[in-house]
Length: 103
Image (tube, rainbow, N blue to C red; front, side, top):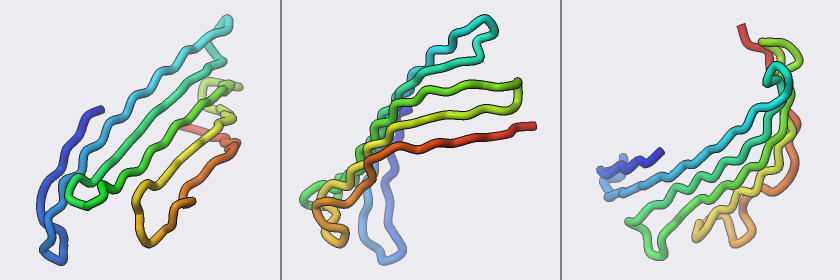
């Protein structure tokens, strides 16, 4: 995904955001019920000085127990860069366990 958005915010200031997202998934097993995947996503605001950005990397492995029930274990590292209100250590780094049912 490549996106770019330009305009004015509610306060009348310019914004110029761009986003890049890349994802890869590999499914395997006799019924392709298992998967591993990775995702990279970055968003930045080119109107700020220094340029503000959010970077996110995800590594995942999962299992579709049935056609509509799945579980996923994921490692996530998300960083906020040059966000003055959040501080230098803003972000998230850790494991997530997710389950879902779809109809």
